[in-house]
Amino acid sequence: GENVEQHPSTLSVQEGDSAVIKCTYSDSASNYFPWYKQELGKRPQLIIDIRSNVGEKKDQRIAVTLNKTAKHFSLHITETQPEDSAVYFCAASSPGGDKIIFGKGTRLHILP
Amino acid sequence: DSGVTQTPKHLITATGQRVTLRCSPRSGDLSVYWYQQSLDQGLQFLIQYYNGEERAKGNILERFSAQQFPDLHSELNLSSLELGDSALYFCASSVWDNTGELFFGEGSRLTVL
Image (tube, rainbow over all chains, first blue to last red; front, side):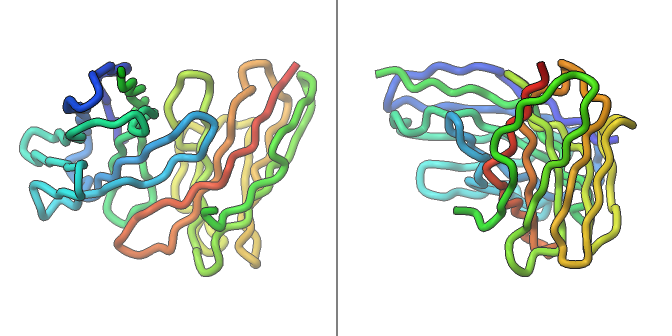
């Protein structure tokens, strides 16, 4: 079945610097790759997603890149702010979206 | 507010007991997903339903079962509870189209003593 590996498990960056979180997936048929942000004590919420027919997508300070050949995708956050502190989860979905598998998460700390 | 309602928010019970967690999806969403989140763990996929039918199974224990009713709400039944079952159980719903976005409820925190 699908397996999603996420690294690093913890990441600390200085406010204003960039953060990069990387994920790899095992099922070459996966075609949808969302990223979720979970603030402390809150529910996960979608922040950006990418489909297999594009290589990059950007939304303000957040961007996601996808390399289908290598089966990996990454989240890039630029000009980090204190409110970016949270746990970020990557996920991969098989065709039809009936099984969305999440990575184990990255705890991002933004240092003042 | 995601529009997904989960009850109860908190539940404390003893080992060996059985509990039922309930989820009402967003209006119009046909798919319901259940995930388990243990301390410092990711979101473990348990099971997914679409319009009343089971569509996919993940790492769901045999002691656990779920169903989706005709009104589209879903219930997750956990039986013969063990200490290790203590976790936050999330329900999520989606429209079942190509967006794929999951809308999560606030979760049900289960503590097994």
